[in-house]
Length: 253
Image (cartoon, rainbow, N blue to C red):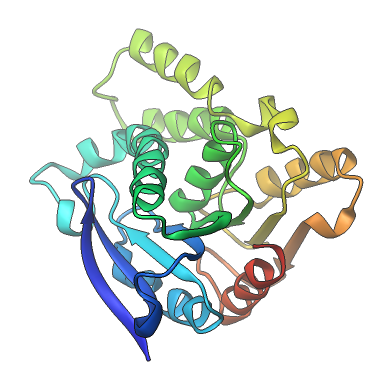
């Protein structure tokens, strides 16, 4: 029986999806980050399918989301987008550390994936942690500095931004540190899957696709990097994407 366990990991509200009979055993483990304005519960279908294959799946709530929802304005949450991404990366280290303390990761088989903001988090985390063994980016951008500039420009067109140009400059500087497109050497040929709908109007399709075209030149085994695109898909993960992601981690994690 697949169980869903609610747990605080280092004060981060998480759902743990795992075969209930193996809850305390070391297992290959996937942490999956949700998208902007979403919450951990929204990724239960993928987590269930992955757990059926013998994995432990961790679904955390990001800052200002789900159980961590705060009484802040919509604009405040929007301009906190990159703070949330960077906080996710820091919290991934806490999650991994807590699992290591309890000896719950089998043979260091620890992967990460995510949707939209969660996919952006995944790409950013690959620049920081060599212990990530496999990754999946679903409609996310690995070109985070470029994407940040796109978002800032669209905000400026909508009206005054409640931040100064100096603060924006500091943000770009911070993001360089997490920008996978500027640190491709940190991939180290680790298994990396992209899925993106060609009609995505939120996160540009070409960010992930052009990155993939460059990144695959750095892989001696082309089976370790894959790009799945859906012609008529927009900014919503399809069942096909979910099933292919589960297959990817079954093969590479």
